[in-house]
Image (cartoon, rainbow, N blue to C red; front, side):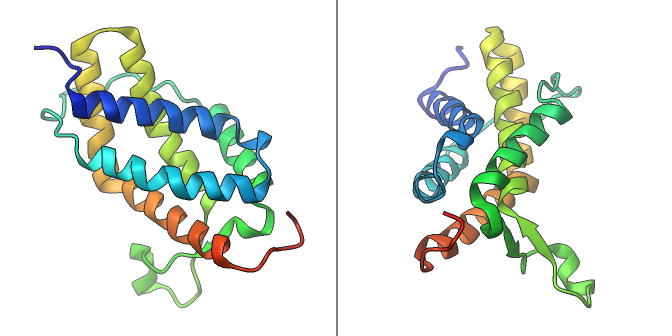
Length: 170
């Protein structure tokens, strides 16, 4: 049986398109980046939620995104968003134990999403169905436990920015 069911192929397509968009974030002005991202993230979330992976593998597939890659993506997004990168993270599990306000950044949330998607996409690019299945299982598990919430946090913050009056650093 081939790895490429309709749902998996649609998710892979969204993963590749999202990575390509985030890799070229610097080419966008702030308003266009926000508009495109608020349209892209809900579709990515939907396509990810529709995928039913196999069980997690005993050993994780190789990771391809380096710290340098991650930081480059994060920095590009932070540069585009400027002062609108930070947001109050009221859903953080640490919030219950904190006496101070907890902030997150859209750029870090999107870089985390990028890292998971890019690692998955590169594994698929290798062309081995077993490796692709393993990478998919790891990516979806990570979505359920980590980057899905980060994606939603970024989307929530981007929505707030998109409906706010224009800022000076556009």
